[in-house]
Image 1 (cartoon, rainbow over the protein chains, first blue to last red):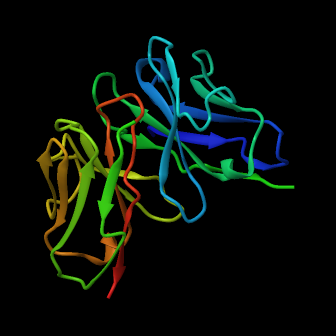
Image 2 (cartoon, chains in turn green, red):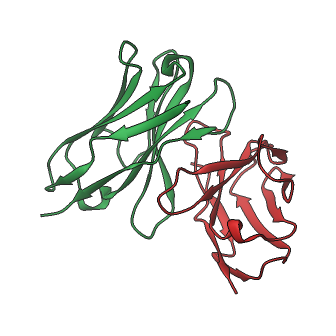
Length: 118
Length: 107
């Protein structure tokens, strides 16, 4: 089955770090643009970061300098390294797939919850 | 960044109603506009892309229109499975901004 499965969420103190994973099945992540999108409790969707098939990366201003997106082609997995976490980073983090070109997100995972609290 | 504004934020409707949600962009996004459906505990679902193209497998009661800065999502006859939150998203730039969402509730 074609799917995305996120993992790695949990409870972390402010200033701490977490690494999220997004494992893909039945397709190759390097052939797509892959993004992370988050939804804070009671709030809307916020795009966080993207990694293009060629390896270029971009970030939302709210996470620039603190989060790093990467990809391991051998594991067919996309990662989001989150450092210097803040209370306002608390959210469900979704992984989303985008076909190459000007395309929408055509597949999403179920998400993983990140809670930043002391 | 391009800002997306949806209205209304909440909509109360009955099964069988025609429902329309509006999305405005702070600058032109051409037709690079998508609509998604979110339900708690489920993966977001793509409904409409390129402003008016229906994603495969999505019921034909969903339709989209617009271009430039003004867009609409219409559900022609609301069904029980359609009570959810809907988001527009522009994908004209790498920072793919979303509207703030419209929650469709049972009246």
